[in-house]
Amino acid sequence: MLTDTLFTSELWYVLLLWGIVCGLLTGLIAGAMAGISGLGGGLIYVPAFVMLLPHDDATLSLQIFASLVAVSITGFFSARAHWRLQHVHVDVLKRLLPALAIGCALGLWLTLRIPEAWLLLALGLLNLAVAWDYWHNKSAPQAQTTSGLLTPMAFPIGYISGSLGIGGGTMLVPWLRRRLPLREAVGTSAACGMLMAALAVSINLAGENIWHQQVGNHLALLLGIWCGLFVSVPKASAWAAQRHALWHELLIRHLLTTIFLLLAAGMLISAYINW
Image 1 (cartoon, rainbow, N blue to C red):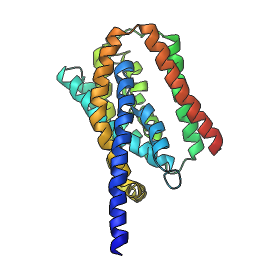
Image 2 (cartoon, helix red, strand yellow):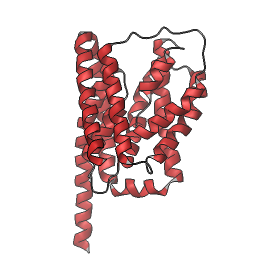
Image 3 (cartoon, one colour):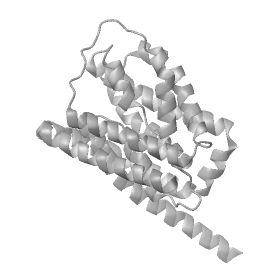
Image 4 (cartoon, rainbow, N blue to C red):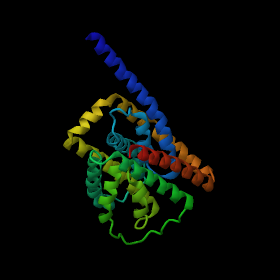
């Protein structure tokens, strides 16, 4: 019994250390992508958790859950920076957050009941859409002075974000840019994504016991990955933001297009295998 306990304890710390290493490396990639593209890390986190967590008992719903936790942790730095720069439109944030959080919580909860192939297909199509957008380089719409109907879009954006494990910036920023200046659109989206993910995770933990079992089975590895992301994402995003000012825009667009095409291909192949 003592030998088994010692072995279990040693294995726990090995998994924790391995998770930290994986989190550091994943954070470098996700942070660099965030600094260059302005997108959150959710599109990187989900494929990373799919590769890192063992496939015998780790479901895609757990990987999406873990991604939203990572979004809430690493999104804090971006939201704090935008808040200090006064780029967060507080009134819009207050109007959007309730529907975003409820939609995200529902979307996350339903991942426990939706076939994995459908979720992988949706992730692949989303990455494909992002790649298409960067390739065609559509000009941004001009900000309007009127606030428009923001709230009706909050629930579906939150639901899609919760279903796919992302912060929602891919959908929120283009929508907000039609009604707010660019800086406020990006800053408000960052704050919405961080708070939405944190609230959705909290609601699911409070109301669904399945999450406790799934997270508990991989707690050491997950804690390590989250800690690694917490350390590396801010540094990588700051470095990438500096490179963004130096590199030619065409090079950046081609680089991002290639990365998102590879992610889309991986998700679509996984969806086909799991069909």
